[in-house]
Image 1 (tube, rainbow, N blue to C red):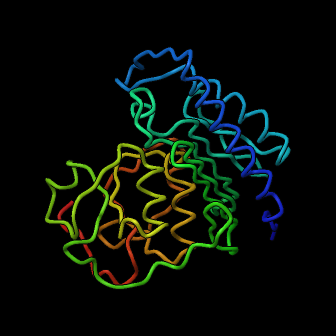
Image 2 (image 1 turned 90 degrees about the vertical axis):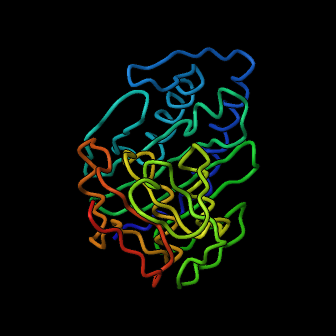
Amino acid sequence: MSDYSGLLPELGSIAEEAGRIASNARDTLQAEIKPDGSILTNADQMVERFLRDRLGSLVPGAAVWGEEYGYSKQEPEGLWLVDPIDGTSNFRFGSPLWGVSIALLKGDTLELGVVNLPDLCETYLCAKGRGVTRNGKALPTIPPGKILPYELVSHGESIRTLTQTPGKMRHAGAFVIDGCFVAAQRYRGLIGINERLYDIAACVLFCLELGADVRYADGTPFNLGELKTNVKVSRPWIMFPKESGFLLSGV
C-alpha cells in the first residue's frame, strides 16, 4: 500500500497557488454560459490548466479528470479529480463562498484530498489514515448522534421536497463550502444529489477520515467506483454523524 502523506505539503501549496490564480483573474474576468446553463469563466480554465501541469508532475502517470477539460479514465497510478473553481457563480458575482478542490483516487480508494477556500483563508488537507488539517491544525472527529432541530444541515430545495429533513437548512451554492463546513463541524451534516465525483471527492475523504457516516440516504453503501464513469449521483446521499438514525424512504 502506497503512503501519499509525504505529498501533502506540496499538494497544499499547489492548491493555494491555484486559489491565487483564480483570485487574481477577477481583474480580467470573462464569463460565458455553458450548454447546461452554468457559468464558465476564464479563471476556471486558467486554474485547471495550471493544476493539470502541476499534478501531472506530483504523481507521474496519474490521469487527470477536471470539470472544464473533460473526463479521463483512471490509470494504474491513479486519477486526480479536479474542480478548479467550485461555486463559479458565487465567484463570478463576488461571493466568498467558492474554492479549489483536488483529490487523488487509486482504485476505488481516495488517498489524498485538498480544498483551498481563498476568500476564507482556509486550506483543508488530508491523506487517508492521517486525519484532516485546516491551516495546519488537526480537526477533531465528528461526534456521533442524532441531529438536533437547531443544528445546521446543508441541502438544496430539491431535497426538502422529498421528506422532512433534520436540522435547519443551509446551502452555500458550492459543494466545497458545504462539505468543508461539515468537516469543520460548522454544519452537522449534508444531503447531496446530482454531483459528479470531482465535485465531492476531497470533502468525502475529509468526512470519512473524521468518522462521518457517508452513504446513500436510504441506508445503502455509497460506492465511489460507480461514479468513475462520469455519471452524476442519481439519488440522495448523506455525510452525517454516525448513529444519526436518518433514513430516507420512497426515493
